[in-house]
Image 1: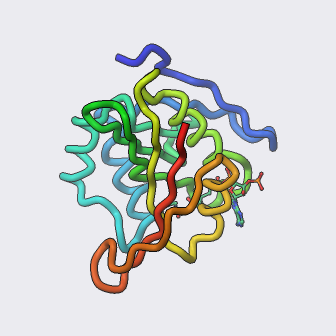
Image 2: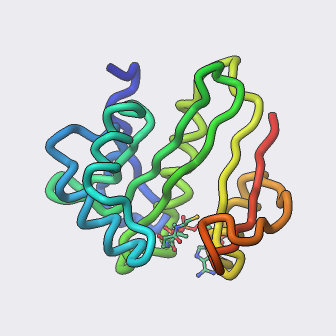
Length: 163
Ligand SMILES: CC(C)(COP(=O)(O)OP(=O)(O)OC[C@H]1O[C@@H](n2cnc3c(N)ncnc32)[C@H](O)[C@@H]1OP(=O)(O)O)[C@@H](O)C(=O)NCCC(=O)NCCS
C-alpha cells in the first residue's frame, strides 16, 4: 500500500476535481479501454496490462474524476532502484492542454523510490511534439533517436532525467 494513496489534483484551468491515485484491480478494464484510445497502434494487450499492474502496482497511477478514468502514467523502477523507466503516459483527448499530464508526471516523479533513483528514462515518438515539450519542461534531456526501437520503422527518441 502506498503512503500517499489519493492525491487531489486541481489543474490551473480549474476543471475537475480530479484525483491521482494508484490503479486498483477494478480499474483494469477501463484502463485497457483508455490505453487503446490513447495508443491505437501500441496499446498494451490486456494480459500485459494486467501483468504490469501486478508488478508495478504503486507506480501505475490513474487520473480519476470519481466516475471514470481520464489518464494514466506508468513507471517502472529497476530492481536496484537506481534507474526508472516511464513506460506510459496519456490523457484523454477532450481534456488535453490543461496541465493534467504534467500533474501525472510530477506525481510519478514524486513517488520514485527516495534516495535510490538517479536516472529516469523514457522513449517517445520523434514527431510527438506535445510530449517532447512536456518532458523537456520537466528537465528531461534528449539522448538521441534509436532506429527501429519498437520494430522496423518505429524509431524512438530517448530522453533522460538525471538527478
Ligand atoms: C502528450 C500528452 C500526454 C500531453 O497531455 P496534456 O494533458 O495535454 O499535457 P499538459 O496540458 O499537462 O501540458 C504539459 C506541457 O506539455 C506540452 N504540450 C502539451 N500539449 C502540447 C501541444 N499541443 N503542443 C506543444 N506542447 C504541448 C507543453 O509544454 C505543456 O506545458 P505548458 O502548458 O506549460 O505549455 C497528451 O497529448 C496525450 O495523451 N497524447 C497521446 C498519448 C501520448 O502521446 N503520450 C506520450 C507518450 S511518450
